[in-house]
Length: 389
Image 1 (cartoon, one colour):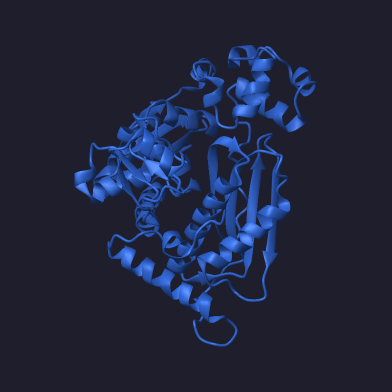
Image 2 (image 1 turned 135 degrees about the horizontal axis):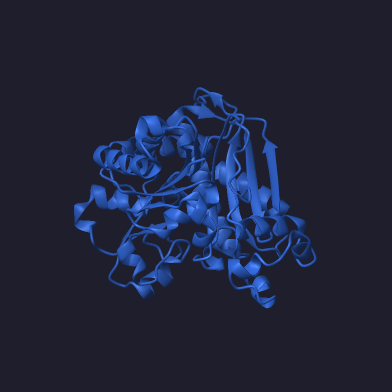
């Protein structure tokens, strides 16, 4: 049976949801992430990208590039609501859906041709169903492995549908610049260029043994597979566990502690709001770090009582990050998780929890309830929490 993978990307997701809910924002440069100059761009519309605005950019810099843009705070609960609808559709197309984030997923479509037709037909049907049921557009990339599917969806955006046949995958990857390939960041790209490797064609001339003389074993294996359009294992599905997690990959490897703190707060907000939405709780916080050289680090801690607020999760995750991170090493990805979650909500009553965290949890539950009703509120972090300098 032929292996067929779809990569689904919800185009400019946060911005698209805002434009869906606020028609006056359509066809205008829209930046999601807040109005404070100390914030960071979470997402932006394609109209804003024309001004070279991009995610993870400081808001003050975005305002310099796009002074007439529309700047709005994030509404994470609304994005989660729309994401759930789309993921329900994805599950109706494939029993194997691997979420990468709130707006991105892989689908194993192997053996589904009798149900949905050939891969390109299936991709068109999926795009149409998502649009008809949500009003949002998605891009779909199709290949025999996850790497090719991911590159294919990136190749044809927005509202794209790109199918790369098995016998054309090497020719396809040869059209992609090295810096556009997932996993090849600035540091690795500089190393490759220093060895006069600027294309996958040149990279393919090196054997695994030759690469091992220059790069680490992990990096060599990654590069060897990429050059041959094979899956390098970047997107391996983790073993199922009862947890709620979220992670983000930076456009560029970073050692900027303020940027890391900002995104740690964003990720903490996402997992806590999901926990509230799913009516679960946890006393264990975990972080994941992927460094520029693709090595991983992780750490977790189990507290004596369940965590009540975004601030508790953030402060715990920050403590783990600061203990685990070698500040001289650039980070390309961070993740936050609540492990071993349990059904049921934590009681707001009792002497076990301090008044401040009880108040914060009540505020966050109110935010979740109001956002689900469609009220436009600023994100929780700008109401109560801030990233310390």
